[in-house]
Image 1 (cartoon, rainbow, N blue to C red):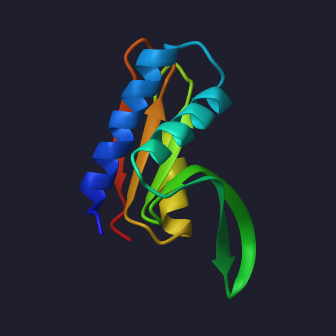
Image 2: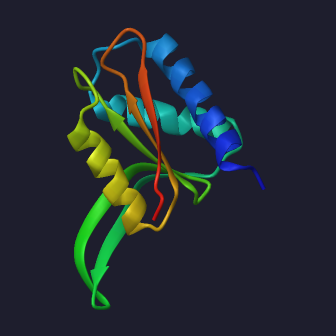
Image 3: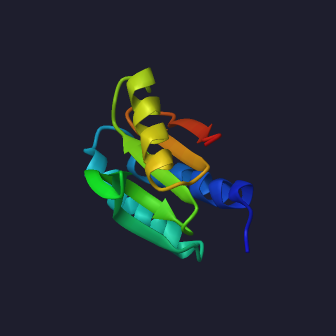
Amino acid sequence: MLSQNEITEKIIGAAYKVSNALGCGFLEKVYENALFIEIKKTGLNVIKQHALQVFYDDQVVGDYFADLFVENEVVVELKTVTMITDIHQAQLMNYLTACNKRCGLIINFAKPRIEIKRMVNGY
């Protein structure tokens, strides 16, 4: 079993391959589809638009969808925005809390050089 660091290294490597091939300027969905393909090439298990449910008092009170969920360990949120903001970081932390996972990545493809933010949920 790979560590979270090894998984994130493979994801980041795949993201750079996608960025180098496509550049910037496409819609988020294009990068999601391309990164899904590239991550699969690494041999990692990856799911697109993974459903995450928020529970309160044993009842579902909200639904979210993570762009990519890798090896049942790492949540990947993709963006095509001017810059990663506190709102994007809060979104990822909510996703990590909802699925009870520690590690997530925000990858922003809007710039010529991708912007990556790795976040760890301390529960």
